[in-house]
Image (tube, rainbow, N blue to C red; front, side):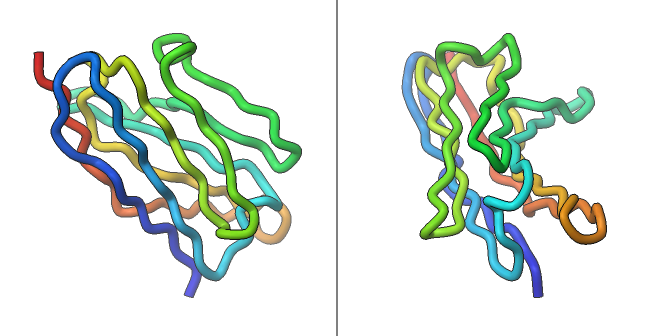
Length: 118
């Protein structure tokens, strides 16, 4: 069964760091784009960062220079390193992979809560 499992969220003070992990089973992350999205209460889900099959990375303007996304093909895992965290980064973070190479199906993880205190 194909699935994505996130981990690494938590509570951190402003200026701190967290690293999120998205481990995949049943799907190969290197074959298409995988991304991190977040949703804060009352807000729509928004893209945070993506990494394409060729390794190209795209970041939301709000996280450029603070967050880094990368993929470990051997572990079939995508990571999001979050530094210099701000209270406005508080949200539930979701991992996404669209299986464009097969059926264009979207896969989402269960989400992990990130809370940044001021």
